[in-house]
Image (cartoon, rainbow, N blue to C red; front, side):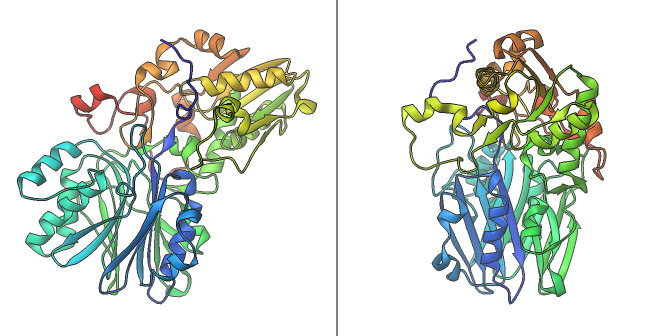
Length: 478
């Protein structure tokens, strides 16, 4: 097996697939509020962005490839007038091409009424549901999970004339991870899979002005909404002129919130199920310092997600923390094709060490995860080139040894370094003086403040809370 990376290959990191946002606030500029919310959630997806608005009569949508600020300007927002809105930012899995059709929200018609659906997660039985719908005469075009979900909802709603019956039918039949928001011309719906794998929370605007739903609480903060609670697994919440009501559409199953949200995906200023992400990362560092101590002069965090954990490691170990790696804040996903020379710069486009700080020092370097190992290898070499005497790598997630099928972009097992090498082999290949990962038990302890204890840890253990169809597992997508 070769762990080398060809120029232009996708990043050596787990990537979140998308985020959703919703607003029900008559009299407010719901499109602008949704735009702000999506900007706060931009870290969860940078391929496309979209907003749909309901005005009491119909639903209008604007979406395109690009970042939120590239897709929406003043003219685009001014054209979206209404009192209910849903928004989405997307990160595609590898092999999935960027396209306008794949961008969300997905617009679908139920008889004469339009709905807009935005989805975070991945369904594992899409092919089966699509086949069933086609056999019933339902036409599908886009081939996305969100289209299949919207068509399943519409299929039953046409028969019962009650949208929540359609949502309930979809939730009973769709398998996998989903946090969804749905807008009709007059109401906002939010619902979540029975394991609660992907996050979804509810906030209230001041002075009774309305309600907000977001993948993370940082989306609530930016529009001035106060966090109220998380959408419960299997629950449907409806926001309308009649107020807020909810029902348990499907029974909640064993809790299985994605634990990697705390490690990397979520913003540090977010709360997940009542647990501060920032404090969880500090705790990961403290626990890792106990599990994998080392004699060193300085602790460094790999920006940005490794920094809170590095502070925790330094606090618990007594080793001084320093900002020894500078991040270029203006390098992210770009829609300008990089040149071969730019690709060869690799990690240096984003990170640059401070030789005046680290030269001659023994370093403990804290990072969130190792997937393929290429970035870690380059980082260690870069630090040695800057004069580091020793580089001890400490990782605040356990070894990633299995692919994710629930909305995270991961490699096949043969490309996951920890699935193919021992710890000693990984350390030698990366070139670090020592390498250690936090234990699963240690990671669980770091998120003990979450109100619901029960996490999806499949990328570490291979134990999937929702059964993966054999054909999907053989294909081992991404």
